Length: 208
Ligand code: PRP
Image 1 (cartoon, rainbow, N blue to C red):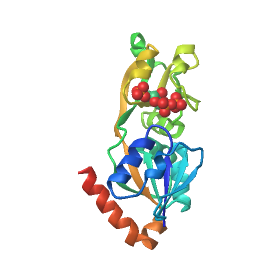
Image 2: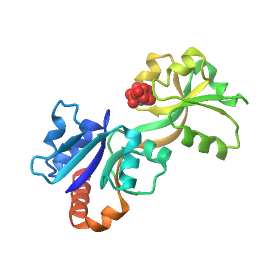
Image 3: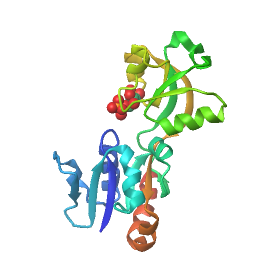
Image 4: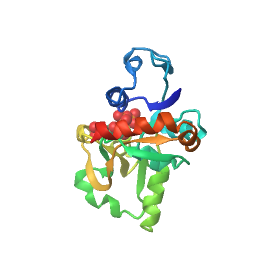
């Protein structure tokens, strides 16, 4: 049996659809349930539905053999696992954003940056040799500049509609090409290679 850790939320439906196209009996993922462990009808696959930021933890520990998770989360969590494939789902960018009229906000020597990507933001500004104050948040990041909690945000932008609806705009694109990735546990890849490698082959075909 292969166990998947799948991100709940915006990637969920697209990941399930992709797996189905690859012959994985993932129809159980379409059921409206609060259950967190689901098993395919053919008994070949188990699915754990977890918060996106927890997918790398489950895969690194080997509780899940494979995972589907955004590159943004992989960069942030920096776990010991294999990134196998770009699934080209949920494309977005990691950006610094704020009020468009205050483009010079980024040059503020005491910049306050609100983000759920604390480690990545720290790395980005360290590489630039700039000291900033990081304000860790868990969601609704756009609220931080609007309320004066922060000067700018460091967050994912997909359609840009959340920024726009809150009077904000991208000030700088830091990482483009943030998409969902297939990740694998290092031991599972060896022990279950006969099941995992054909599945990866099929995914590559479908994506191409
Ligand atoms: C993410 C992100 C932005 C929004 C960007 O939040 O933090 O708020 O999506 O998407 P858009 O460019 O298409 O508007 P998410 O919806 O995951 O919820 P959260 O606020 O709970 O983190």
